[in-house]
Length: 351
Ligand code: AHG
Ligand code: MN
Ligand code: MN
Image 1 (cartoon, rainbow, N blue to C red):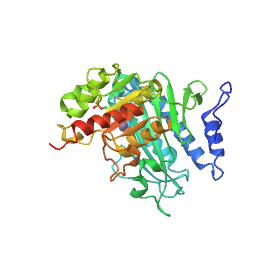
Image 2 (image 1 turned 180 degrees about the horizontal axis):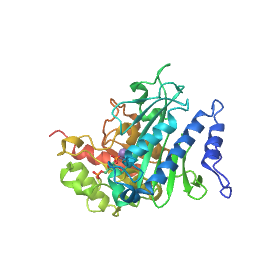
Image 3 (image 1 turned 90 degrees about the horizontal axis):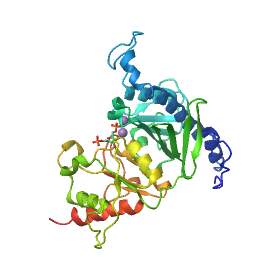
């Protein structure tokens, strides 16, 4: 186990950190280290593109050709292709899957196959791109289950409990990479001049006392009674099930799950995207289980928090399809368990 007492005066690059962490696994071959580093590299490239976001207006609008006569790609597509292209030839992966592609993504013909599976949301919060608001990338890494040959859909449909590593990049005022491989959660900040991710947040723990709740309250009229009452409880306006009131929390909602999650991870709180009783697209919530909710759930658990779909731990859910959605409650354990209790009391009773 990497020592808790990392010498914080030492400058630690992400490469060094991942390498040291993997050294504590005697069976480690270095492949995971390299894979995580490839993802960090993809993150650097995406950060450089997202930070130039507005310049597309000058160089050419998406869907048109720019002044060099090249087609200007949507940033989601660009990020999607970048992650795929940086990983398809390395021999570390058996198969990939992306939010932007309906089917699984086989390794390109002619390249060697590896033992890992990579699922990703190339750009999360993409409705914010045009407004210069923080966005992110989410990744999930599993061991392949199939014996050999190209990876399969079943390799991509694993419970979060089987995650080998997961993490996210947040493209905010600075670019950060936060990941876990089951030995705590570690955050790195990109030094844009040097081009390296440096360890700035070792062993992140969600603060015990929460500050924030994060939900799109504009949809309140579509919520169940349990969700509405839970939200009022968080505001300090509704009694707990034992009759006591809590001090109200502040509301923060960006609309980029990665950014909302990141703030609550560091500041303490709960993020939720519940089921929507009116919009038929979102009766199971909006967020995807395999490449949005499960990887964040692993990070949360490693940071001392928990996650739920309202009744079950996200990490225990078996995805049936690649793009399956789930209601998500994630953050401080006490608040996630409270959400479950309100749902149990008000939404699950026999009617
Ligand atoms: P994506 O951009 O990858 O499709 O994800 C968007 C998600 C998530 O980032 C965010 O929490 C949520 O959509 C915001 O949805 P609302 O605008 O409905 O609040
Ligand atoms: Mn997303
Ligand atoms: Mn996305």
